[in-house]
Image (cartoon, rainbow, N blue to C red; front, top):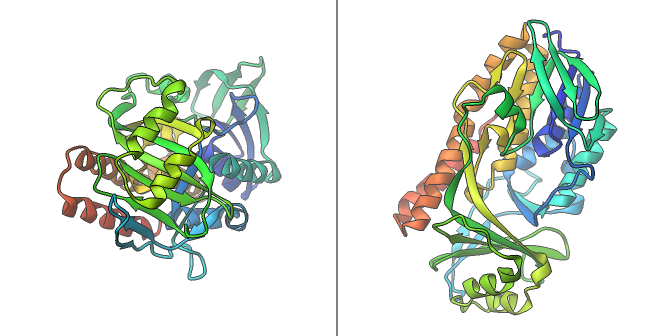
Length: 374
């Protein structure tokens, strides 16, 4: 077991909170700093696969997710006119009694994780981040933006796609790249007939809906968008409505008529895969800071949370911090690379109206790989 007694986590997103929860189970003192003073999570719904629900079970938040979100089996597939094509199966990875997928509002999931983080005994400081990181062979000295200083056995950078920790320790690391697609999301009342995720394929864009609670669902529309240009929020409603206009499926017609501009979220899709190593000395990166993926496999949150679980495991059983970080890297690289690169390829096929058989094969192979133990 490593002599890791005190850890700093920079970033209070899903990966950072998960790392805090897991480390506190082993009695490690954890400080977590989050720049946002209100600890907010932006966005609408988030779709989750069975591997994510398995990770929730490990964290101890699965029952809270089931209470406040929605879990269901399968993804129903339709043509633009509403004709049913079939169903994509979702294996019950989290256990025989737990459906194979689900969804929840991002802010709701963030609140669940934040409560579990505090309940675990994590020392959380909001409106604060690091101003400098200096390390030696035995630990890391950190200066904070609130004037405080601290010394830690390990620093975990979990501060997302535009990570400041990454920029500080790996200044030559690649930067996020635009994928050529963007996604629109909106929160809507859930009709009784929406039991699980539904997608309409074969049009110029790819819409879908997923229930996020007993009363709500969220709409997602993936659009091919060659240029990463800012969209004026005043244009959100007319642009999203225009994308849905080509679909004659009755449900999408009703959704189009009920759109509310205030609930629409637009996000260009970016991705990032930082080459190994993901650590230097006693500073390590996890989650979107090193492997941000597009949502084609609904697994971005999953692989970040899995990072936290695996890192805690290795820190508790390896003979030294360096050995723990080396083994963490070895366990995580291929799985995370697969999700990022396969998601990118799925987007490329969609943009080119390419081989549907290849698209299906990649999705199936990725789902099978994610079902394997972490």
